[in-house]
Length: 437
Ligand code: ASP
Image 1 (tube, rainbow, N blue to C red):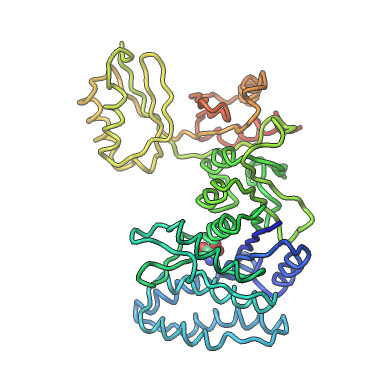
Image 2: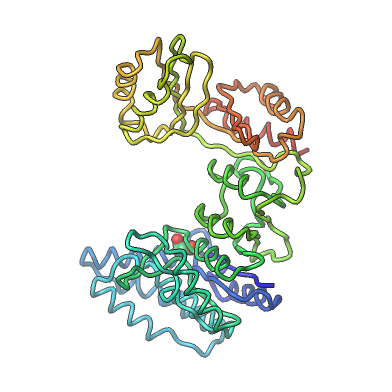
């Protein structure tokens, strides 16, 4: 059994957190490859080391003094080393990084040093070898991960070490320069390492006990999700519910490796299992979760006999394409077609887009409805459960919410409804309580 375990920034923010991490790793010998983030926030007012590094980069660029900010970074690591009572030093690394900084090293290189230093420190503490991501996470000329080469390099390095710590978040370009993933990218590294190691499970340790059935800022104390499929996860994260970098799903999903979201501060909690295929047809709550997003505009296009006009839809969508606007949903009726787009995406071109659509398809009417919210009810058992939709609409009606549009994708994994933004919270609360008593 091989487990790849990734610890996020808050799990490695200070010595106390390092101790928890060591306990977790050492309590299970199958936890063999550990991926580390940079030290995150110790409290709500704290700064992440990655942010401090990026501040340093900017200061140098603006020809300003970096001493104070760089000192803060050094002290984060020095404090951890001192509080763990470790006979270990990063002073040489610090001066190397400062020199690079003063010689205008690239921003990715600077940003990546948080992970580099933290993984070295964690490796020393766990007494595991350190494998540098620079030697095995390889990007191609276009800045995309070279999956095959990366797998081969990772496998050969991991083959040499039974246990190891690797820094998350970065890899190397073909020219030898450092490249980072987007922010939060250590999740991606963990997933890549899990796939290369052919791990039985990818454990992603963070500061919450898994995914919740609804946004805790809207619903009081929502239940955690015990099991969710990759597909359901995708639907919920599209709506903004997320505990992990979106792209981190793909490497493990391809290799059919389950992800377990766990809480470093509550290691006894089972967390959420993200699985390729559900072990049960349906959760005991019928729905897996409910999530939503605001800021949606609907463009309603109406034209008699639209269904008989070949290429009608294509022409409408082409107008959006010309303005580089992607659409979110496309519910349609017999003589109507509605295109749902993000408010932000069309903000500047509303008038121009409407005018172009009039020119292209000559509709009977075209109307824009702004300030809508989408709500997705995600539920793998929908196909087999009668009355789920009825319960959703009953709950919304009971809460006095007017449903503006309905969209049930062909996957039957979810029902999406559009409501007015002002009804956003009420809708989520009503749906949640309909299914969770
Ligand atoms: N340290 C990086 C960030 O703050 C990457 C990560 O933590 O995953 O975005």
